[in-house]
Length: 100
Image (cartoon, rainbow, N blue to C red; front, side):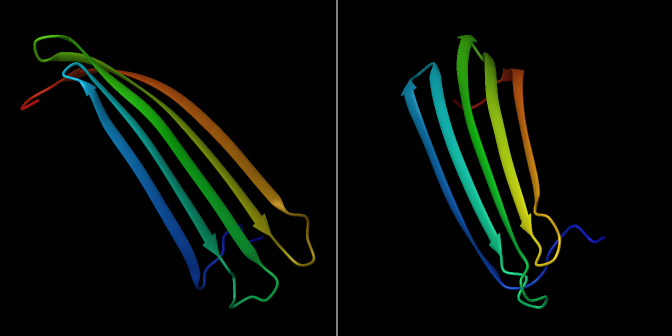
């Protein structure tokens, strides 16, 4: 069975970024996608993606960054069970800053 949709849809994106001090940045990002599956009646797909991250300068141009990603997908079919996927990921990075 094909587990994806195509057709007209809509999306929305919100991104917020704040420099708290010279040493700290916070980022929040959210994305929402909706695909109607109009070419195949009765089908649709809803995808949500969120990301929260921070960067902290340690010394000079050296910094540490961390991010939390979360995603959710729900696919609907008229004569079959809905499919739901969820995932999350936490990451930590060493970063070299330039021009900050």
